[in-house]
Figure 1 (cartoon, rainbow, N blue to C red):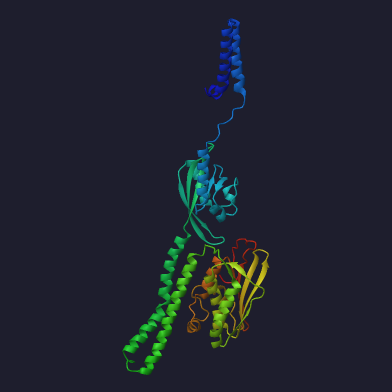
Figure 2 (cartoon, rainbow, N blue to C red):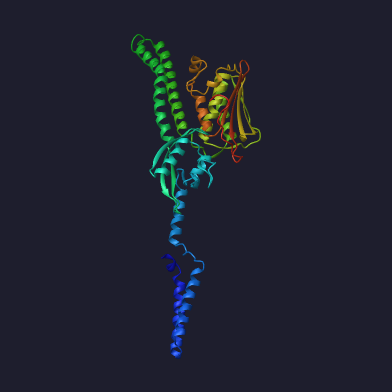
Length: 423
């Protein structure tokens, strides 16, 4: 039934032409049976020949085109990754967030080339076979650990060839980190604050009792209490800083900063305190500027911690330097080094130096104002900046700590799954 409808313009044209011819013949007085049969035959032949020609599809309505453009624009601005795959799990569409998360994602290629998580792939197959939505968990560890909830739903293909699967990846990393941060903060604070609090309580009770009238003891005890209170303040500040850095560790910074200027600033600030401890700091900045993509406040804290550690535990002559280097795997890098000629660190301690509250000599570290969190803050800050930390030390000769960061504008580095030095 659809063919006559499809070719109805040809039949209508033939009928109109035949009717006009018959009308003209009738007016001229020449209308007879052979002429009528010839006219009907012409009508049938013209309609049949016209129906055989190619049929052009009607133009696509402008409203439909506009709606598709709006849908594509909305998809491009969705902040979470969205991926559409067909019944063969070939990628049909993906928004910019999905391509940023999965660089190997390409149109018309299998999703498994970019996303190799068995649970997600099994979930897609289940949705395509049943048509029922599913939710699965996805965890990535390269270049950083991230957690997603993947919502998979079935959609009909536009050409009617079957079902497709729509993947919506909801990033749960910040929520999970926040939860872990709360647990860690309570555990660490309660453990590390117990000793200074006990010290304060003990001296307060002494001042209220036996030393009530002893002015000399009171002055000595108040100084000890002040030191312990400052220690608790530093500890809480470091814990909060570490928690904030861990919370944003998966979000790479986008600002451009000059690492040389930041290093110069911290060398100038740490110079006078170093002199009071009998140490000198020399800065060699070479051929700057040294531009990196980074958070200025966090990088200042990294440099500050490294210089403070060198002053507290190394002493003597401290050298801070900046150079460029070309790494065959990581591309062009900016390397900041902090070296001292102190007593050095035994090899068995180096892999654990970035652990929270790890101290080679706990009593000496506390006496020098250390909280045991400095290098942990450095490590997590560098993770956020896609940097690397290496520590080299020889007992009796000194220690060299190097921080390597991608140079801004250089070729992007490939994901690195291991980290040299402590981690």
